[in-house]
Length: 387
Image (cartoon, rainbow, N blue to C red):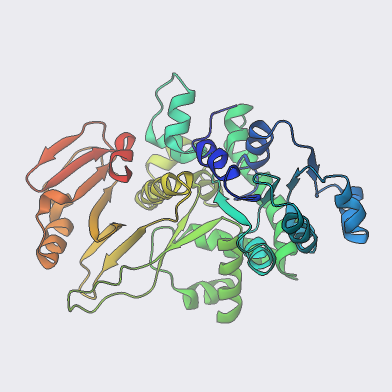
């Protein structure tokens, strides 16, 4: 098993709270992680039909078997169970007693906030981070290889063909998970919607355009986007609120948590195709921002990434908010540093009254540099910013 960085935080929270909920996309490694960390606890999969029926029809008797605690996998399948867990926890508030996992952020948080508030700590586990992959392998891989393969553990564990695996993943996701969140009658249209989203990776979200191209209403597009967000397929990077008296873009930008999945949706079948694809820059940008978010999630914190763009087209790809400090980051897929890479940082730091030296450029090359216009970091060393 590839060691997960979130393991340290998971063990720490288990000493502080009666219940821990680990949420994230399917196949991200949640079950493997919690079963490794909590080896002594009984494992119960609520995906199993017989187990789920028992839990739904006779929850008290079902839970009587696990007075000492247990791992309940995919808890969103039986949300009513949380109310009974609340009573058990209140009667015997032992830290680290129950470990819950779930693949649907919206469903799980909705029920947890109503029943286990103050009794549960939430952790988000995304697919493998670049740091975890690099630590687990002695081979040096190219950025294109990571973009194409993505970061889901099973692909690396079993040396699977990424295109084939993601095709099955998408099909399973649409047929099982989407129906669990919302009863969508036209699954073909929903699949088209996901592919259209992949075609807009790294762009300002325009729901009206998405709806028109997919042949659905604006409200339907909004609802479907929420489904993709809550099941960890896409995330919307919000614009930073500090405007410096300028008119700003207020719509978020659309990204995918996993670029391998996005490549599959774009019908990119090998690394050679990816290198010349018109969305290569957007995929690279998505990969970098997702990595910055993984670092935060693995620390048990919420992401602190934004972007900034004014109506004149001046833009910063990513702004990290650390307390009262703002770190501007430009993300460039090119492998050679050119002076144009620093224009956005220079413009923004002038507005903010900061030195350009506080800005960063993350690029597709391998060398780190310190320039008067800002820091230059290889994609392999981006963790330096998040620390």
